[in-house]
Amino acid sequence: TLAVQGLSQTNRNNEAENRVLPDYGMNDLAVFGLVQHDFTNNVHLQVGFRFDNRFLDVPEQEKTGHSHEEEPDPPDGDGHEEVLMPSLNKYFGNVSGSLGVTWQLADGILLRGNLASAYRAPNVAELTQDGEHGIRYEQGNRDLRSQRNYELDASIHFHRERIMLDLAAYYNQISQYIFLGYTRDTTEEGLPVFRYVQDDASIYGLEGIAEFLPFKWLSIKASYNYTRGKRTQGGNLPFIPHNRLRSEIRYMPGGILKKGQVYLKFGSELAFQQDHPALLETVSEAYHLLHAGIGISIPFSGRSLSCDIQVRNMLDKRYTDHLSTLKTLGYYNAGRNIVINLSIPLLSSGT
Image: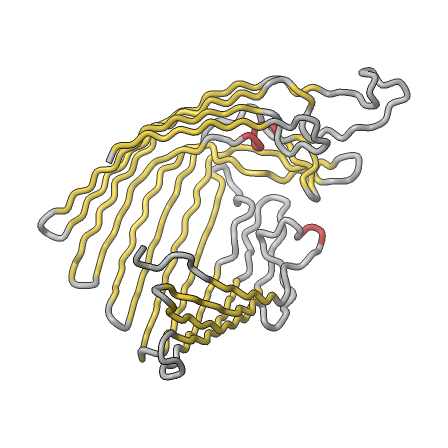
């Protein structure tokens, strides 16, 4: 497979009072390809490559996020002092590639491995941000460079009729990793200042999933996720999630409906203490949430109508997740949350 992909994007604020992003123009052009081959000894090979080009043009304009204050004798005569943001012209280009192998050891048993390298160009906000963003003041960095990663992952999969086991591990070495860093600075109004910075880093972890179906009407599922992020020069990366253990029991009784299916489920989510915070972050305590749900699906005229009710955080537990941007203000995450979903397909499954 060979392909070409392009994107042209323009942002204009015109007379908008609040400017989240500045006026800019961006053009992307990419060429990519994928080659796959199956060998006779149950080995599948996949090779991919991609060449990206990004052209970014930010003209000189009034500073994004600038807070206007009244002046007795305004220099520009319209009630505020205009602060200009210099123009910014950037080009980002690089090559990405991957090599993956899948080996089927036996029926339902697979080994997979992947070696890849890719890059990510800084976005407009990371380059130009300079203003209040919710409860903090964010400052971009015009000198940011593309971040480059080298990634290795391996996994084993065991799938049979009534049991499924998946175990995967990965290691990601990132050069010039871009992240929003804490600082000790504050604005005159007392807002903490965050700045986009770069540093070499590594992100690694593992995840496992196990599902067991002792009967056709009963499913027991559990998953575990472990993630760590470290800076090469020492210290932890900010906003790294809790390690989590999730479990779910799903009951699918038969005989209730002549056609269709009903299910009941009960789930648990255990987030372990996040005790490896970054500089100026604080430890986030462990928490345990319980969830439940009931759903029904009914075939109708070649379609499948479905409706379900989900209740998350059933016990209305007070907790603060490590990824919460409101943690420093002492706000908790969402309490008991009830969601009703109704799905009505407009086309039949055969169309």
